[in-house]
Image (cartoon, rainbow, N blue to C red):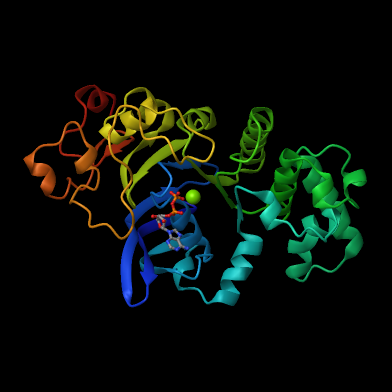
Length: 325
Ligand SMILES: Nc1ncnc2c1ncn2[C@@H]1O[C@H](COP(=O)(O)OP(=O)(O)O)[C@@H](O)[C@H]1O
Ligand SMILES: [Mg+2]
């Protein structure tokens, strides 16, 4: 049974009385211990998908449909208080910029153990023990020494490890990591990736990893969901999808040199850019940019052309990619 089962999740951005779909009925499962990556250019709806599942959407966004079943409960229909309990116990999330998520005035030790206190675990000595252990598991050197330091005294890579320790301290079954290495240098990035792999391997924790960087996703060796304009266009084992892409968008992403923030540079081999949420979209949202488009692309792509573990939503999937399917 999957750990998390997302069915037809839709998220809309509201502007005044208007509402625009930003995530359009996406469905996927995550098995226990599995790493699943969502990839796509900036603005494709990756973060809103994650935030929707976690009940952390910004003011301007709201879930307009679907389910996200974790341990038999639909997270999307839980009241806020219940959702806080889930976030502290069974699911945790880390973000791109640890400094904005860490409290600059709170010492590291207190910060790492905060989720325990918040969930009623008040035994300070026991929490300290758990905190030091989580920090060690997150690869922080000399946790005892870091315990009474403040976030600004740490490097970006160390701060992200503090975030991971904090997320990991309740031993969540699911960790969602939204571009957690984007603010880090290449060395820290490699360390954080390895660490997430180890934590997941050692404890069976499932990871939903979000990134615009396919090179990095290949290194995670999980399953990948390629997202474009609020929908999935291709899915499958990362190695297979990235070696034999079936969708023109995946090919375009592979041809692009990722920038650190995923913004800016257009895809080298594909003209145009990601539509804004307010733009009207074609049946296949990628059609206007697609080099293989045909007349039929004005109609919805087939629900999912699938073979083995691969899937693609396209009228004209790449022949070689399809063989790889
Ligand atoms: N708080 C917000 N207010 C208005 N629009 C938003 C907000 N958050 C996201 N959006 C819009 O929703 C779309 C998807 O955003 P997001 O999920 O953050 O993309 P990604 O994480 O893939 O870069 C984008 O077009 C973005 O501009
Ligand atoms: Mg994002």
